[in-house]
Image (cartoon, rainbow, N blue to C red):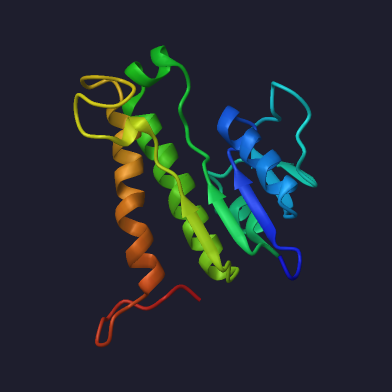
Length: 165
């Protein structure tokens, strides 16, 4: 790497995010972790760790400031009891997290944005929660999967919609 890239890992307090932080640090990135909680497994290797609420547009803007690459892993998951009983809350929370992160990354001119879905984002009856139990997670992830390419392209010629200021 010619110069040190700065990567933001959202969901860095979770199992996968925590390991992604370690991976990126080992490859020479300066890493900022962001999550509602610190990692429970061991101290984070992130150079900076923001305990923040990514459902907040303001927190997303702060998290994306000075960032070159975003690894968007943050999601409202909870345990199986929560997932099976809180479809609306999970959907709303994940849509807020994903929409605010995507918008903040664009406004802060982040160069790369990786959106990671989950097994819960798969088709009905597949993935980590067969049947309807993962419905709230799937909806939030599906909305974001569709929004990323459209948001990245911006408005097309003649489109009445304009990019955010």
